[in-house]
Image (cartoon, rainbow, N blue to C red; front, side):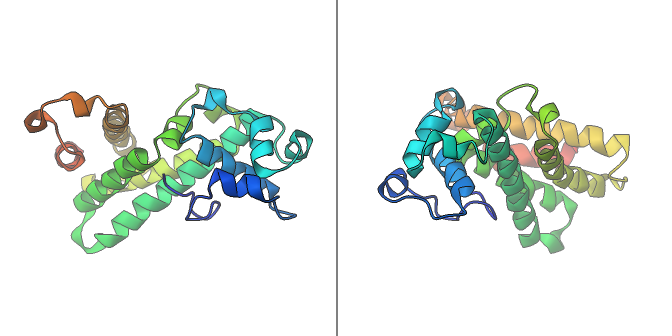
Length: 213
């Protein structure tokens, strides 16, 4: 499971660690987000509750309401953090191949994207899990758009187009759609059921994207 960079510690805390000691004053918000992130590796979002998360960090549910008005507010912030981390991972991968040019940048971003989904499927599904979340909170929409901008910039550079152009944005939507679809098939176990010689790797799919972008 990916740790949420910047906001969540790089080593995800265990649930027992939360239950054995109370949170330190001032970081209950982070503790609740960490607990929710960890819990998503075990159950879906429908089975999460603020009451359960509060219990896991050793506080009353009323204390959790000081930071999140309800479960949905917590999940939207966790989703936004997920997009922040996804963006960071893509940029880090691009930086590793910076001298090689935009085609390699796109492949690196795509590989980071599929790796993120594979390593933290619970969070990844949450990020795209419910219609209407993007319109409900500006913070989440901004985080998602910032991640998408990484893809747009790669595609625009490959095409010699402006990142604001319809050409670049439409092509980037196509790239994102294919990589997202691949990630969902991968974490859903559908690709594992294919014969190995017929099952494309993420790198193979991304090579096709680099040609078509």
